[in-house]
Length: 289
Image: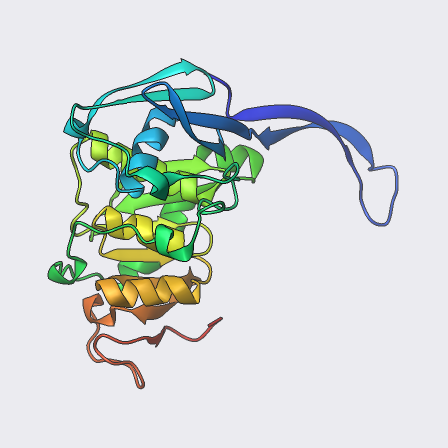
């Protein structure tokens, strides 16, 4: 398997320039294409960091609504370092044009190349509104540090996104890293599918970057009731979260957070001013948002 880091010689420059300038070795996060094939036929190419590629292939197909359980897949094998070939179980078929890609999926965007916004909306199997799991703001506030402490490759390179799945008590169940935030989440979804843990009822998904529509969709497909991000969500992510009954939290950092939807799951003594039971608002001592 290809490595997750690559060494490169760099010139370290300080301002003002002086005798401290020098050449040294630096570690970079590896970015390489992964081709996902179904029945030996090319389906998609995504730019990713090598590692957990079978989880990535499984999570991609689950997020796209192709598979919903391990029994939908006969096998996933790596043909070489950058090709994953999936054999679907008899009777499981690709949903035609909806999976068509116009061009390569980059590490920055997992829905680039979709034919239309309607094609992005994957029909969800799980009812998140039926999952009443309560979560503590204090527990949520501690998750970013737990995620960072577990990011081994990020510690060495500073160049990877991470996704972590936690229990409602804050225990880390799984973490995946990748140059693409959507890949990191797909790796989590693929892990859960292969471990027969779907739906991820009562769990919290934390992502290291922003919460895009695509990440909210992936959380919905996996049955995750709480999605938290250290940065901002998009407007479409908030709309999807509200429609589906998901709790969406952004700017989770420094002991504060913004709660955009599903505030009823947070265990607080009383709803802050301007925050309805199922609406949006801000908790903590302020911050972006």
